Amino acid sequence: TSEGLNRFDVKHYKIFTHSAGDNNSLGNNCILSLYESDDRKLWLGTELGLYIYDLVSEEFQRFDTKTEDEVIISTGVSKIIGGDQDKIWIGTLGQGYFIYDRQTEVLRQNTRYSSYIWALHKNPAGNMFFNTDEGDIVELNRAGNYLNTYKSPGLSNNLRNIKVTSIYYKDGILWYGLDIFGLVRLELQTKEMRMLTPVGNNSTSYIPSIQP
Image 1: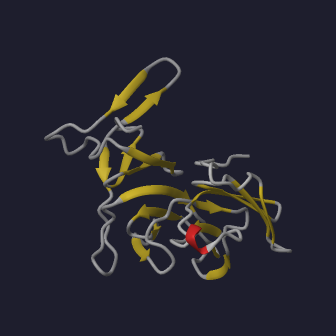
Image 2 (image 1 turned 120 degrees about the vertical axis):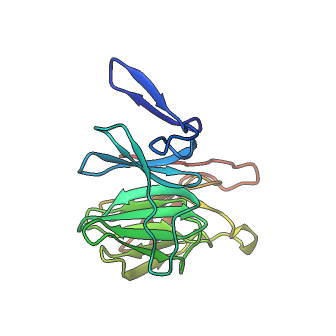
């Protein structure tokens, strides 16, 4: 939440927040994203960087790994997804996306397609989909190499600032939600696209998440 990490284990409810002077506490109380890795670590995306919570010791650690250009993740972390080959994909609000290799402990940054990643999704083949600054969707393979760009719906130029807020893939169909105008259905093989919410001046349908 915006007031720290909330944990409920059926019997007990506990809230973890920042504690001044405690280096093992959560560094920022505004949680934007969560991801649990297979080593029982909880990755927390906050509005000011990335933190790792140890479920056993109940301690927090700032993720301070740098890229080869000495860049650290310091902005809002909107999405965290586990990729193939022990990699973690991290979408940020201002620094593009990062790929962290847990085996080599190498962090790579990419801002070529977008600085602000609002939506990030992995399909069963391991390919990643994410939004661009122009409201389109880019597909990369599991290694991070470019595959495709899927254009936004046929909207007039003055609406090109529409933001893709959520993405979901199933059976060759790419579903994605927008901050306005609702939901889009794209059949990848035929490129047939349909808006599932009427487009109108008063349409403000916001789709923050798409789940099976």
